[in-house]
Image (cartoon, rainbow, N blue to C red; front, top):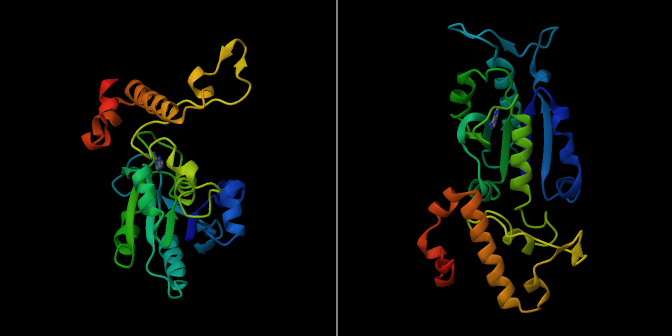
Length: 244
Ligand code: ADE
């Protein structure tokens, strides 16, 4: 997968060089490039923002550097299909595991990280004539800019690409994969500060362990995220689930 990130703070994305995502770049599974939007300015101060038309607080990102940056990126398409441009924004559609799965099969994603009050709307209107553009929100809260959101999305997406996470089984057993939150997990020692690991996990009876884990997932989801249980299609529940 090809990934490009446009930002006025490219250093914000530095942690993506570490750990599994860093290894996936070294292995060539993902090709990540971070671009400094200020490289597309032409004045001494490398200006990227200005006051909003219509008045109001804060600054808006000017369209010219964005336009030039997109022109430059798209000119490197080199046979690649058109990219999907993701604009991290609290006004976007909600990011979740389902969207991460859909994005993980795209060949080319571009993250356009805005700052201040946002990017001049014409950038999106124009870019939408040459690429698909979707604003995406991490959740109902406001960050200082799109960089942290882009980083979170890139991590969630990249780990679904085959070969990025060493053991693919660990992907199917985690929170949100089956619409539920993950069950609690334990490791050695079997007793720690007077707290024992649930007996059943030491029993070696895998059918019973699976059932216990499923029940714990259901209980935890009901307690912490009742909205997820509500959304779960009835076909996802079995008779034993309905008994708890
Ligand atoms: N930029 C600022 N806040 C954001 C959010 N909640 N999600 C995505 N991008 C953002």
